[in-house]
Image (cartoon, helix red, strand yellow):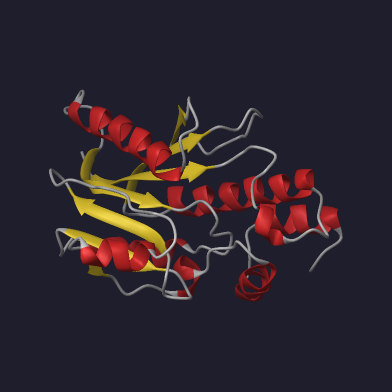
Length: 217
C-alpha cells in the first residue's frame, strides 16, 4: 500500500467555539464559522497526496458531511485540546497497527489544527514532504508563537504541547521547524486573522458561512 501520513485534526464544535472572533457575532454564529473553518481544513487535508487518512477528533453534536477519507473520533470527556489530540493519536496508532496488509501504511502521524480555512493541499504536501526528513517537526503559525502542524515519523512519539507559546514549547522538545506556505500558517482566532485568511482565499464552506452572517466577502 502507498505510504502516507495519518493526520489528526481536533475540531471544537460546542457553542463556545471561536469566542475570540468578537462580540459582534453571536455564540452560535461563531460556532458555525468554526465548523466551517474545520470542514474546509479537512477537505484540503484529505485531498493532499501525502495524507493517507484523516482522524477528526470532535465534541460536535451536529452531523457534518466529512469527506470519505475521514475517521471521526468522539472526544468523549472534555479535558482540553491536548487531551483531545492525544485521543486522536491513540486512534491513529491503533489504525496503523491493525490490518497492515490492507490498510494504508503511515509515513508518520501528524496533528493539524482545524482552523485553517485558507489551507491549500500543495502547502500541506510540501510541509509533510519536509517532515519525512526529520524525526519530529512543527510549523509555526503566522505570528510565530503558535503551532499549526506537528509531525513525527512512524514509530516515534508525538507529544502535543499546544496552547500559549506552543511553537517555543515544541522547538524546546526537539521538534525541527518546517518551512511552510502562508495557507498552512494562517490559523484564525481573531478578526484580523480572518481578514488575512479571506485575502488568501478561504474554502467554499467558510465563504458560505461568512455570506450567511453578512460579514466579509
